[in-house]
Every structure is written in structure tokens, then in C-alpha cells.
Image (cartoon, rainbow, N blue to C red; front, top):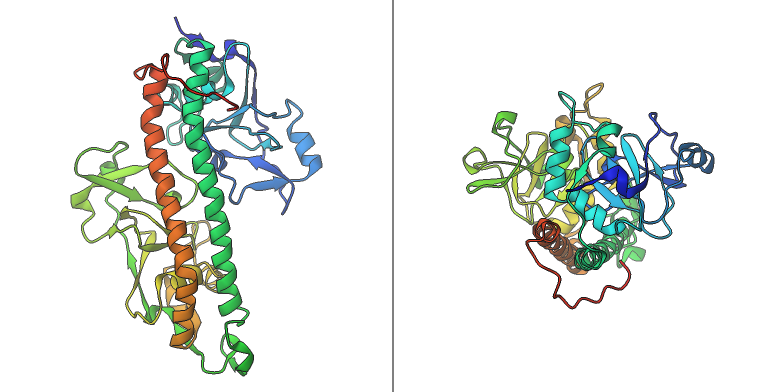
Length: 408
């Protein structure tokens, strides 16, 4: 005999069914793009004023250890509110407050994002094009029988350590990214590179630049290789032998549900881990590296064809305000942007070779460490996702494990 979600919770509250007015700072408004598999994705999160926060929390004020669940797009993702994070619900989310006398909140979170309940959520979801959950279905969600509290604590402690390692690495990645972007801006935007005091400034079509620098089109140094589109009938939702991940624009952002295609459909359109990509349709200008698989026609692989420039320089140049503004300024389309034509308009102020080499020597160790930490996080997530269903289902027996529980 299992459990009903509503019976082990103090409350299950729906979000406001309207978009909250946003501002540059304030309280995070948690929407479905901000929910991963057991973690919040707060990069670029919408923020709201105190008045909006109060209005959007009239039904219930989200508290520490509450769970926020995505009702739609991507359905079933969830995260638990940590200490000292005040948030409100964005659209298509649900607040779940576990009854701590019946279930450990962390255990309930891991149960909800485990394979068994995720499959159940998909089976009861409705919607022809975009699956979504009704509140009644959420409240009446069938769960397996709960193990005794000591087992819940052990299982949660094991999984929690993976999340903490991922969180720690993510913080380090953010710091490294900020360091590298600041160095790029200082050298190539503010022109405060080593020895700049001795250089004269001259006019150019990009504005004032140091004497000896040249304005060049970026596609003289980089080939923007277009991806492929195998068709949705060839998408696979699970990995099997002979397939590779297929990356679309949403996969460069917050979406974390992978799609696969057969390797035969990906010939000459494969990414290696060190490749840099940029989105050119839809949400244009997203720059990523560290992907392995095949990529869609909305994405370009940025392949260096002249080694005058290097990968760290290219990565941060593509993320710079100058290039991002150029991409968006020359994009076409009223609802869905198309920015392929922007490529021929992207220009850079190219520094002398010795300055480029000095930049590489300074930033490349930061760039490589950041990629190493991202790779570690991917491995941690894969290991965690393999362990989670086995722990939740009892296939891995924790009864005899000597685990220091501590605070989860």
C-alpha cells in the first residue's frame, strides 16, 4: 500500500496564473526554467519587488524545506528551498510543503524526481502539445510506501552530498567566469592591456581603438558551421547503443531533458568537448562549450580557421556586449529571431599578436579549470542520477551503512 502525496503534505498550493511584473533586483520569481532535477537554476532568474512578492505569496509564503514543482515545460522538475532564500512562485509552478512528521522533505524531493514518479507524472499529464499537470492530479499523486525515517535520512544524506559538490563546483565556475570576462573587458573593451600606457588611440569604424590594432571581420578567422535537423520522428528520449545527444537551442539554456538521435544522422555535425557553439535562431547569442553530440540548424559550431586567435579569446569575444549587440541588431523575424545574416556584420578590433598571446597565457588556465569543473559536475550528475532510482526503490540497501547524517 503506497501513499498519496496530499496525505503526507501540510499544503500543496498553486501559483498565480499571471506573469509577475519584474525588475532588475529583488526577490527571485521561480518559473519552470529555474527548476532543474533537484536544483534551482538561478542564472537570469526574474526578480520582483517587495509589493509583488507580497501579492504573489498571499496563498502561502514559500519557506525553507518547501518543494517547488514544475507543472509544465519541463514537467516534473523540482527543487527544495534552501536556508535564507526568499522566493515567490512564477507561472506553472506548485508549492509543496511536506509534513515533516511523516516524510523527510529531502527524501520527498528525491522521490519526486526519481524515475518511477517521473514516469507516473508523464503518464497522468495532459495536453496535446505541451504536457501539464492538473492540481488534482498532483494532490492525488500515488507514491510508493515510505521507508522508516532513518532510511530516509541515509538515502537523503548520500544524494545530498552529490548536490553539495555540484553546488560548490558551480560557485567556483561562476567566480572563474567572472574573472575571465573582466580580464577580456579590461584588455579588449577598456584597452587597459599591459603596456597600453605607451600606445596612442586612433579613430576606427568601431570607435576609438589603440594604434596598431585593426578592425577585422570575425568570419575571416572563424567558420560558423551550421548543424542538421533529422526531424522529430527521429528523436529518442533515452540513450541506446549507437545514438548521440542532439542539442537544440533550448539545451543551451535551462532545459535539461536530453534528446538523442542515431549516429548515422549526425555525420559531419558532431561536437567535441572543446568546441564553442552559438545559437543563431530563437534565443540568439547563447554561447556554450563543453558539449558532446550533434547540433541543430539553429546552432553554429565556431571553428577557428586562423590560429591568430585562440579559443578563450573567441569564447569571451562572442559573449561580449559588442558582438551580442551586433547579432541582435541584424537578426530578423517578428516572433522567432533568425540571426544567420548577422555573421557577416560581426567585427572585432584585432590586437597585435604578442598581446593575443599574452591574453591566452593569462586566461587559458582559468578557461581550462572552468571546463574541468563543468566536466566534473556532469559526471557527478550522471552518477547521482544512476544512484537515485536504485536508492529510492531499495535496490541498494542502506540499512547497514554507517552514514553520518548531519544536516541535509
